[in-house]
Length: 128
Image 1 (cartoon, rainbow, N blue to C red):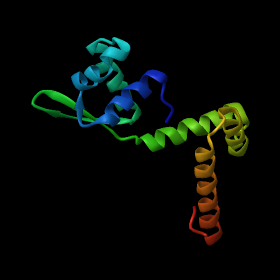
Image 2 (tube, rainbow, N blue to C red):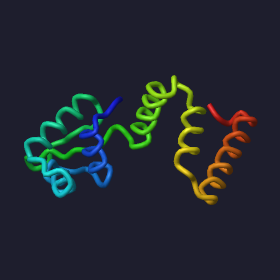
Image 3 (cartoon, helix red, strand yellow):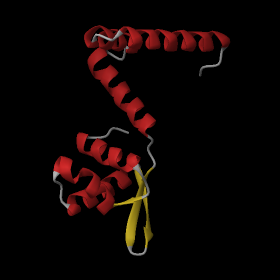
C-alpha cells in the first residue's frame, strides 16, 4: 500500500502509540504541521478506507490503530523507489545508497555483517 507524504506523517504519529484518538494524533503533529482537527479526521478516514488503520468507538470517541506495520510500509516504499529509480534492481539501489551516503567504518562493518548473516541463512535454506 502506497502512502502519501501526509499519510506517512499520520502513520508515524499512530506508530508512536495507539490506540489514539484524532485529538491525540493532532497533538503529536500540531507543532510540525499546523493541521486542523477536521483535516486529521478526514485523513484518518481515508487511511481507514485504504485498510492502513482501523477504528473503534469508545465513549463517543473514535480510537485508531495501525493495521499496516511500519515494516510493511517501508518495504512497499522501498520497492516503489527501486522500481521507479533503479529499474527494480535492489543491488543497484544499495550500491548507490552506500556510495552516496559516505558510511562510517562502523556502519560499513554493520552492513557487512548483516549481508554475511543473510548469505549464511540463504545458504542454509532458512530465507524465503
